[in-house]
Amino acid sequence: MEALDALLNRVSVPRLVEPAPDAAQREMLFRAALRAPDHGQLRPWRFLTVEGQARERMGELFAEALQVADAHAVPEALNKARGMPLRAPLLVVVIARVQAHPKVPASEQVIAAGCAAHGMLLAAHAQGIGAVWRTGDMAYNAHVAKGLGLAADEQIIAYLYLGTPERELRRAPEVRVEDFVSAWEG
Picture (tube, helix red, strand yellow):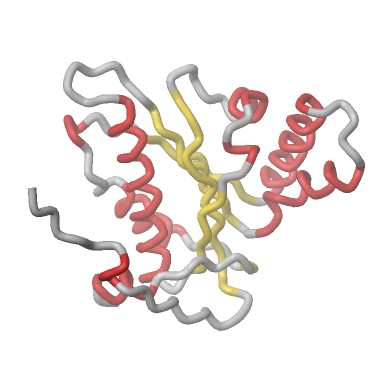
């Protein structure tokens, strides 16, 4: 697939089924992620893969986090939390690893990790893999961060859900460039 085609036509694919990306496809996903812009070559990211029964354990972690946040969480909400990681055969947790640096502020490092996640989405689309970037409360939850083994200087940027598209991809919506671009005249 041409690079511009991937950039212009990538869409989120929320309905994903087996199979998950194979080893060669995953290698390409991570290689693309590692090409993200990286001021200072800090490589301020790391990735966790979650698949198979680990998705069920992650669902339990999400349910626990919900109960910690709300002792009166209703069973429906707990079941929804448990089911979240089961929406795709493979999840990649994208983690920003912020490091103290005199020239590279924390915000740039977090953006770089976001660019790594975007690179993975583009590489997935180019390979015919369905993918969607999700966050939500479980991306910002201290109990989840601890359960996933994040250090104090780390934060979850994205849960990338990956698999085979359940149905034909929707067409990327047309967006008018002029609605977002203007000249600054000084």
